[in-house]
Amino acid sequence: MRLATIMLEDRATEAIVLGDGVLPLEPIAGLDPVLGMPASGEAALGRAREWATAHGDRAPLPLDSLIYLPAVPHPGAIYTVGLNYRKPGEDAGSGPHRPLIYGKAASAVAAHGAELSWDRSLTDNVDAESELGVVIGAIATAVAPEDALSRVFGYTCINDISSRDPWLDGDQWLLGKSMPGFCPVGPWIVTRDDLDPTNLRLGCTINGAPIQDGTTADMRFGVAEIIAFLSRHVTLVPGDLIATGTPARLMDPPGPERRLRPGDVVTVWIEGIGELTNTIA
Image (cartoon, rainbow, N blue to C red; front, side, top):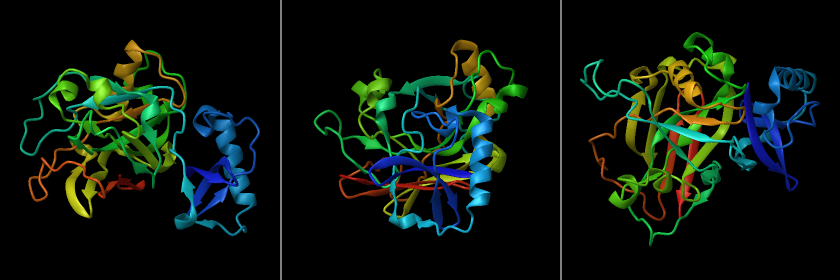
């Protein structure tokens, strides 16, 4: 199942994505009013499936007519994983021997279709990164890797927008990754039962030109390992987001040093999920 959060008649509404359209959900018993479906448990998700089956004859709203909200509008925490993709030709045993964890402020989330702007007097050296996003759906404390995926609600696209200025990227990672709009999330969530995250192509384009093209099979640490590692140190709660790392930049034009400029259209795409597109102001 694919679940989007959209604006409908001036209110936030969860909707089920069906082909080229969505069916806005009517109020579901037990649905968390803030965190929505990820925090509401399997029972609420089951009721949503039953509702969709019972109302399948309704005409869906076209995808291109929607105003999207972030797929997780109010994440409790956003954890990011650094250096998690092997480079082409790299030995399997090289690189970090445990996940490298840092984070982004929850206030940085933005929606599919949103125009992104930031204070360019602070940084004008900003790039985009395609990342598989994991949405936590159940409390996780010291879980074993074999149990970790049971804590996942679903998967989404994340654009881990980051400053590359040395005074931010060098020693202020949280600030350099947390400006308003630096974490687009969407366009929707694919529930865990509908997606295997182990071998998905993912990438990013700027104005249609590819800057990344990789596969989650090249992760040093898979989703289960990341959740298990994180949960040994912090308690993961429903609605938390994990950005699982990003593949290397392509060397072909526009090249790895291409930064985001006003007017750019940047798209993060992940096989089995979809495309997350934003315009740079």
